[in-house]
Length: 490
Ligand code: SF4
Image (cartoon, rainbow, N blue to C red; front, top):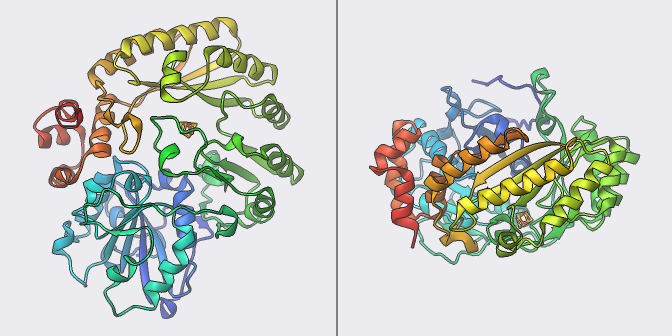
């Protein structure tokens, strides 16, 4: 059965005659979420490089039968030799477990045999803390795949009749999921210029998605990792060091990518894109080629020249991340930005015709969220008073402490944060649109970010019940916030 939900270009199709191995590339969230990021497009490209290995995508959907059917040929998860799950977000663990359950694949690795697919988990969540999934998966992959993707494909193809998990485990970055080794090392792509990058990216071409630029554009990753290392940030911690694609390499990707992806629109990707040492040259080159682009966010301390370039392109909205309203708190989290820098930035942004700014803040960076909320309010009021014509959106989110970061022991009080979010919502609504991530889900995310193997039976039960917040409450036999405080605040 072929699922015809989205008309797409650059879908990989292979003849059954040539296929020796089938890989299901699983994104345990919706098609729209998965296809709005680079990870699935990149992995799909890398894992289809071998002519005899066919990788198909499977996304999670609440509508049966989609949780267990591939986009390309409608295959059930049972019909693959390998299932490679990409985890970008801890809350997707429940979707993944539901997909396995709905496919009648035994959920515990120990209950599966050679007739079942091999289950591999990778992505930033796994690189940070794979333990909550350790009894479910067979193999974890820690890090970035490009530099070892050929080795991976060649090993499995030349060892069809051997124990495939043994073969894979000899490749750097792959670990047996049952081995509770906290010191697993991630494999990092040293030189981005040397590795394979998708220039003909799979994307939907449905008319109803034409307004979603992220879905319709060509993703150009200019850099990886981040040079700044804010103490709460996982990406700045696990994907080190900061690496750039050279201008020469990017020129060739700009020449080929949009043409082969049938688009004139480029989304520039990177943890801190505007920090690329040749960002001006890159943008000028894109413009010379008469292509459009978007730079979704820039750092508050980025030079005025970036704003000048954005003005020429007509981009009139931008996102920045002050994180806090207080200089002292920013100092504490490793962000060397002062409120005066934020004021100066808004002034420059207005000078260069930016009409709308989105400001990202985090609540819970200290043990006094009420004070944090007040500082945010003060900063926003000051800025709005100084620049009344500028439109603002505010995104204020509760901190989710992550393993491997300095904030793992922050012991966030989500009940207090909830009250402070309400306070900010009431007070900031006259200054701009206000959005925040629900604290109840932030508490569950914190449990999954910090927890270990003890979560396996609980997650399985939650998934069996459907995965709602109430299901979590019933299975944990207490409010998830209390469970987090009782178990992970040490
Ligand atoms: S600048 Fe952004 S990506 Fe870099 S470490 Fe800080 S929060 Fe993370």
